[in-house]
Length: 408
Image 1: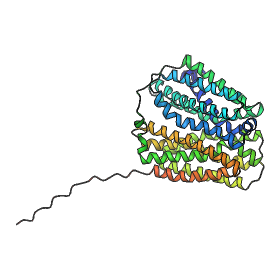
Image 2 (image 1 turned 120 degrees about the horizontal axis):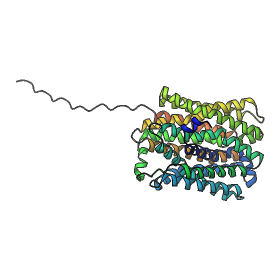
Image 3 (image 1 turned 135 degrees about the vertical axis):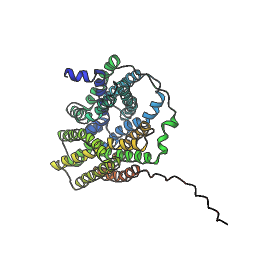
Image 4 (image 1 turned 90 degrees about the vertical axis):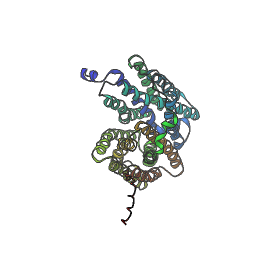
């Protein structure tokens, strides 16, 4: 790393970036090694997919509750404790021979991630120099996106080449290294004033926020359901090799990084309403195209499926900045509270999508996953349009002028 880069960003911030990369890898890597996990633990592909459900539900439900309970704790101590639990949970997953135990450990890892992720963002934002809060936060949040084209494909390759257990062992090792770096280098950031639960959930009373959270939930149900079962779909429907699955995941990750910036630029230029309709509409059409292709293709991996996956990735990963901008616009008085609900909605949708996808994979075949996902996204488009509708100003009520008495 160059001297200028080191001067621009401190080592502790880069450690937070790597920590978020490990979290992103842990969340999504199962999609690429699902067949190996299912075979080793002696369960079906659909049942193994519930490991994704467990992690996502724990994150979605745990994030607001744990944030409320730990609000007054020092952020640095909270981060190191969360990383310790996260690393130990992944070590335990790597040596577990029981599916039920592995499922419980994925819940523990999801709860730990629900502590680590917002704490990383809090430290980055509060410890940033004056005027650089946004850039520091961007470095941290970029770790999740970069995981898509580095950690997830490499973890998938490692799982195929050695063992899926080696993948989780490496995630634990990286988390332990980040823990040590943060313990010695990260700044101490004091906790805040405890916020009441009623105040935290206040944006739910806003109908526009509610519609946008529902849109994010449905997007998680549809889009992330397809991504979580991408490896299983390629294996069961297309008889794909491990290398072909890794290539597909790499395409998703590389396109996804560019898509994040595309979504942000589109929002700035057209506004949240048009951007949401464009991205969610494109997401629905792209997944629908994949549904048609998989429904009419018996087996074999062709260039067309990689192109379709790439197009889908554009809209799938451009979604987050578009929806976040819409939620901030809908709730300018409490944007952070509203955005936290949106994130929980997305993770909750991912969990439901993983559960539904597992059922579809076992009972109706892999080609039904994008079909049902397209239906979820179609409803999400309507919900997003309702959530971003312009607010109609209520005209002021004027008192009627008193009637003049006729002159006598």
